[in-house]
Length: 201
Image (cartoon, rainbow, N blue to C red; front, side, top):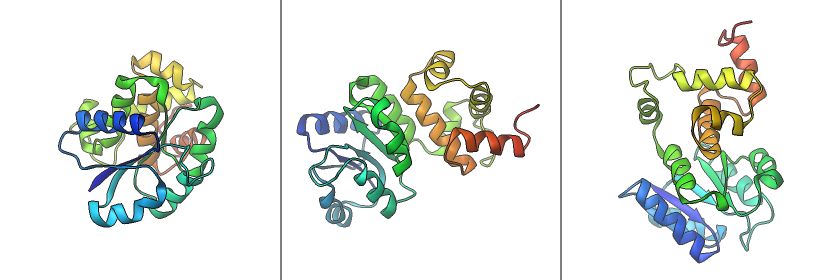
């Protein structure tokens, strides 16, 4: 099992690898500069547990790398880590299958916190959220709180401010919530919540 960092900028790639080794000591982290090297790397280094993907690779166009990875590994979490502003490309990345979009300019601690949260198992994440005794099919207190915030129309930034966490960590919380409910968007989450009595009124 390995984490794959795919970025053609050596300095940025090394920085992400360093962060990953700090948040998940002992993990196998594989560095690639282009997507076409992935097949061979998986054969020799092991199945992926997380992808950290840059958009500007020499052998991809726009979000084609995201679509390709999700087509082959639909269940492996994928974080796009790009220098482009989220306002420009996050939506198209999510539509292509990316789970979380992280701006490279976010800073080391924000990126590290988001990646750490993505690498936790559901039970580890629930324990961190103070819900260690929660049955695996139930929502954590934080996830129920998120649903209420979504229902109130709060943006990621407003949720981040209310919870005292970064926007990138909010995105990871939402990704986990979507995955647990089997949905892909805020709208689908709220529909599911209403249909299943998770919201009142």
